[in-house]
Image 1 (tube, one colour):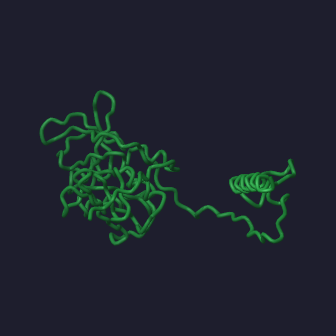
Image 2 (cartoon, rainbow, N blue to C red; image 1 turned 90 degrees about the vertical axis):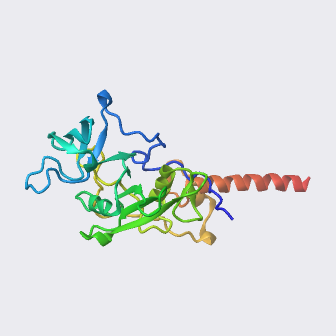
Image 3 (cartoon, rainbow, N blue to C red; image 1 turned 135 degrees about the vertical axis):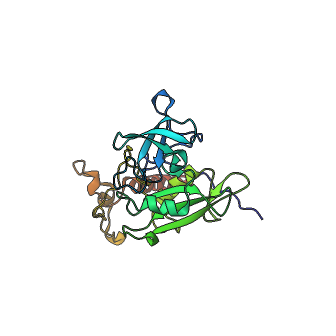
Length: 262
């Protein structure tokens, strides 16, 4: 029996700057048809001073042959670099031609924290992808977790067979809101030096403010519906949605009562 695709999990998200609509698989275009790639290695290697460092965003100035002329967006340095020293990135998180070890190296770079992630092609399952997530701020490779993203014949994707998505973007969006078995929520894409994406904000989590638990036996209507016009709605014991639901229920039951009496 095949896996039935789930409903579209796309919806309103607080990560609007992170999660874009599904785009054609084309490199990010800049002015004059230039596009952006990311350095996978320090270059030149074996030198204390590198003109290009791993993880930097590069603007390709010339891509003829196996050696490309590029400019680092982080430093402004221009250099020639082997084309296989670079990787194209889509949607800020989908990396092309990046293996497991390189994904771990990129996620271990500065600015990446718990929840930093990227999506790459699976090395062992052609046609599938892998989701790599940094699970902690520890400076060890074991802090990086990997999850295989399978692809169905109809083009849908899944990590857990019971939850499928019509696109990788929809999958990323869902797991940025609910971890659903992953080690943590997806937060920011793997940081790219010289790019406009903002590093993960560190610090204590915001304080959660909970309203007091209601003892419904002691609650009267004025407490529920904030009949005092000068009272702020935030001070009410129940949410606006619940108040509207109670109002609707009372209205419907009163109407039904009149009909029964007639």
